[in-house]
Image 1: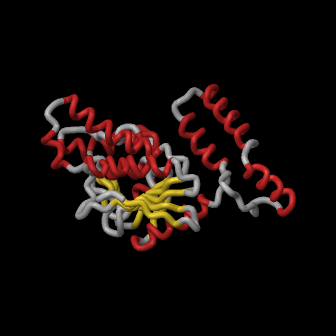
Image 2: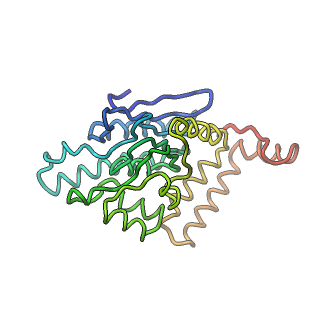
Image 3: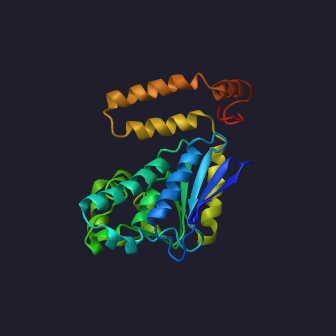
Length: 261
């Protein structure tokens, strides 16, 4: 695996962990970004994995981009290229067919917050702190912070957080819908794993649901429902549709064992 991003796979449960490991702060460098992009590409082709957890370890998720790399950016063109590399890595993560969960302990600031927002769900430890502090450096978020945050929590609150650069603790993050749950710090990653294991047991249609919702988000309703109809049809070409329907007829709901095929 990479120097800063490692992939841990539990084949029995069908769950993978993307482990960010660049001490002391897990600052998101260009190398880390490239390694994340490579691992996302690998996971996208792995049909044996049904869910993915992103974790920075028990102390810190990711404290932001590696500011030491910024002085090397000499002009607008280089800054845009820098930003797009991070965008592409986070889009690769966001567009994974698997269900994704960020387990956030400690700081998730700047690029770290953007990384967490690129997953389907965020579980926070009690010590978790989120924010987009780029404005305090005289710049703006370069990895989706102005865009994903308002899609997750609404434009007014997202403006306030981006304009001020202030930090958001775990309790507030739960209140505004940035995270799905808050746990004691030691329980955050284990809880994310348990949730991931349940999603990994799901049918192939779970991947269709994710794709239709993400693809339809920016479309007019009339176009988005066509995506849903196509995906509904796709379900009828899966083994899991046969398994699920027959299990329902024989045993009632919620008892099927799916294959993700």
